[in-house]
Picture (cartoon, rainbow, N blue to C red):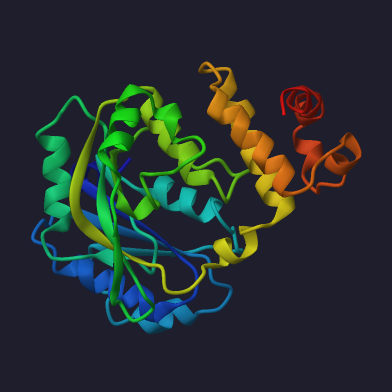
Length: 295
């Protein structure tokens, strides 16, 4: 192992999984380069089939803080996200989607101080500005006091409502084995948050909108997953059973599953068998019969 390389580990790894849209990525990188906190590396994992991204961001790549990896083959979500996490060397992880950005130059400093000043916490998240495609603020997303209270009681209260927000608002200590579940894409962020908080539920909430989120156009994942019967039913039930062994199931969880099945008109075992992902979750068959007795 290169001892010099190891000794130069940065405090923070900013992980950016990139897929096309180089102009958005440039905005993200420029917001990083003006940060007052400077002990960081930027890990960009390019999942685009073409050279579009590296051609457009080439002007910034000579910066020694920027490390660009182009995947040999397209990994898709969330494996490209995991590639960035696995390449990270910092004590802290700051995740940023390629079309999200720091709201101002002090954002990273605030995130770092949040965990430095609270050594008992491993996880922090902030509010954010939701912006249109041109960067104009549409509204502020911020967890409500009641939601923060629920999260302090148990991370499992994130199911089925993700009030933390997108991964770009999070900041956490790097831990081996804590990655996005490759079987998920729609509820993958909820799964990771619960995974990160299940070992230590102490966290820091930062009410300032430290990050700006591009909500002006549907991402590839949003377009693929929204109201997609195969994806929604499989992922919500998969996550339900994944978590069920770790906490006491609540009525609101069962009620949500009942609503989900009704929404997608899953009213029989035959309906369930038509789902594309059903072979990955055989327990659904038994569960459906159980839910039908309740609802």
